[in-house]
Length: 212
Image (cartoon, rainbow, N blue to C red; front, top):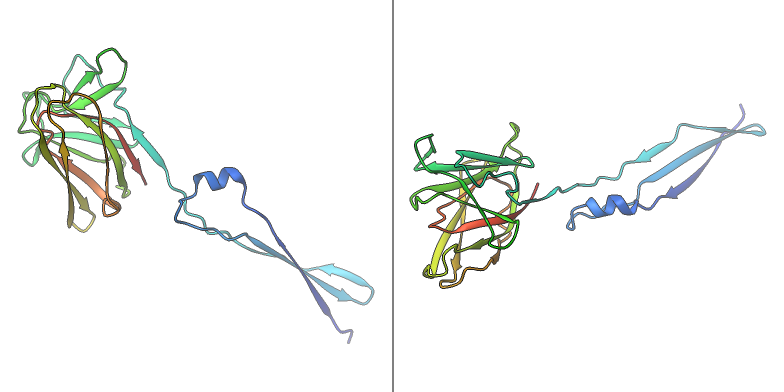
């Protein structure tokens, strides 16, 4: 019986730059390893099936909602953009056709759109994914402003809801007597959410930055 000698060649391939650009910054991905076994049978080398170690990589989708599709001349009960949905609520129920709900506000002297809850300070806004799978997301940041520069300093509580029904909260303080954008970064506990709700109190929001 002719003895078989196996020789292994290992080759590591670096991940493409375009793949790295879409990878989560917290997720490291090792180089895939391809091993080829060659059997020495007499004087001939025979290639054996190769085995590839897959590179486990988590891709994160970055989304910034700009509300560019909101109609400045109408009130809507819900607005969808890039897989997310903003819904106006009166208590626990969505707005109905009789309520001044989500409206668009064009920035003075510019083309950027801000979303706000009509003239009803008792309405709340709720953000979730528009897809049926309800894939969890993270709220990273948003820009918010007082449309009226005479508005007082006030706090707004954002409540994030998880799939199991539990919640997390984060309060921001909007500077009064100031009508420019104010940027707020959200903490790490605002991830793996299925929805985020808040009462605008007359403020308008734009450029909501999300990942999922």
